[in-house]
Image 1 (cartoon, rainbow, N blue to C red):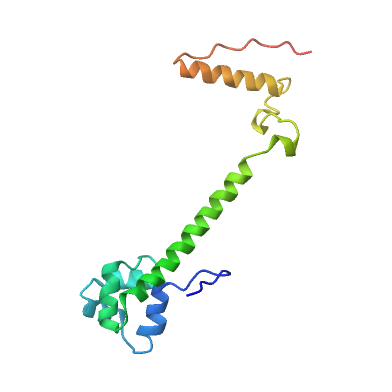
Image 2 (cartoon, one colour):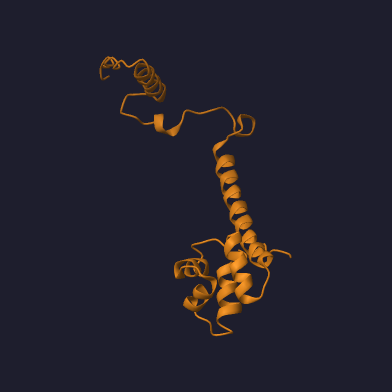
Length: 151
């Protein structure tokens, strides 16, 4: 079965509601009673808050005359779509955070070191941050920096 690439696959809940329950005028309560499961399970599947498990696929197939593989395939399509989307987002974030020195010129100081205070250079701020971090690692408080004369 070919999966759509321009949209998310149809959820098992949407299939259940639109293709099965609505045409035969069966309510969620009736389906849950026939499946011997709580109404919250059926409602959760229909509203996309719960996944179709092997157990619920077996019960759905028994009540509706389908196969459990049908319901598992529908759930699998959703799971794969979500996993691909999550992986793609992680890759985009990772690619955006890595900078190639060759393609982007010399390395610059991070922006949070720039414009710290009037008269304090980015290099001085970076050095002070490193000193504070080293002191923190040694469980000592950092020494007070010497005051600069305005000039």
